[in-house]
Length: 584
Image 1 (cartoon, rainbow, N blue to C red):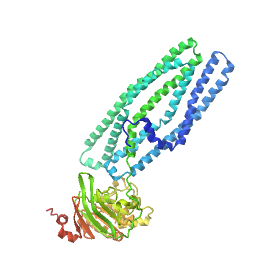
Image 2 (cartoon, rainbow, N blue to C red):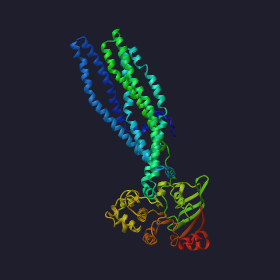
Image 3 (cartoon, rainbow, N blue to C red):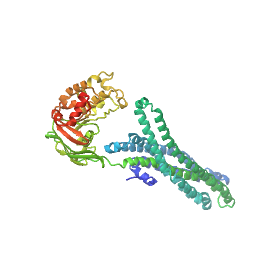
């Protein structure tokens, strides 16, 4: 369900209700405390009225009678009630926001790769932090949403019992102020949504500046990025100024709501006292309760404005939550790894967009425990094959089979349990090297991790660090070279012990000698595995069972290296370029 900018306050709390219900005990106790807190001012008003009348009539016995004890009881009860009201309120807000953050984070993790590839990580980060922070601010008012209307209605009823004419004269302007306030704040959801989006753009710029600081400094782009950020923050300022202008116009309403009733009560209330329509005690109590009446109406209006201001951020949060989870492919939970065919593509085609064909009529087969190399120039669609194979995208047509089963019939968990991948863009987490490799297989022992590192030709350089395997990988892996990152990623994939291993340019940052050593050290690990390698280096095709050549999304040749040199001019040209430097 998409949320428009006209989402109502009721719908906001409906969407938040599942998170609120999880902590209904705290909310219930808070409401109970609010009800008691609501009764205390009325108890005080009742006792003040009795004490005032008793004092004026010099009734000493009545003065120190019930009214006096009610006054003391109200003051004493107010201390623990206020304490528990604040405690339950704070616990409710903290736990609800914790659950909301966890839920949104969990949801983001379950979204599809196409969704993540279409969104900037800085925008998602802004929604998880800034926008949920706005929800936290809104939840701070949950207490008041219960308490303020109770106070307003309670005082209204009590004042009505004193004198309805004085009450009517006091509140006659309230509907007008609410009407004007509504007119002024109608655009708050749109303005706040624009502020949230501009803040998201600023967050993206900050992230890009930090991650690309070497390029920015090398190409002297500091002023360009400063200008971009300044323009973005100027937009935030302009939208914020529009809200502030309207808030400034609302301020006189708050002042009028306080001053006008005060003048009316003093003048008209005094007149009614002279006419003996109300007692002096009634007049005093009316004055005592007046700040509760005007304060609550101003607070209700403020809550209403806060809800409207927070709507923009809430819309952005539920835009994410309204995105469907990554679709499960099928129901097959186990694969027969002994099947003679590990992988098969039958007439597979794929387009990211309807009018741009990336892969067309792809056909090839990989026998079990064999090695296949996919060769071709950049942009020919090689990496897309891996995305289809991992179930990140669905082919536009055709069938992909893994160990004899249609990929659409295999559950995504089962599929990915049987595949280990080393991506072209190596990513290591900012934890220890040991922990990074261990992510390949849960429960792996230290010895198994070290064995995988040795197979990936990573052990020797790891132990040279002062902390060896306990070395923390810095953000963006800046304390590692490109080749070191790739070998740690290789170790992670090897540790998984998956029957099908996908290598996407696994040695692009490694020199030829290290690559040769690496291939030798991995032989034992890969002996009983089915392997698919994407590589620009055609030297990788010498020791392989089959090579398929892709150009412009189509297979234009297949066979062993020597065969392709004699039958595929495109492949021969690529090989010649790499071995002799002759680009013709």
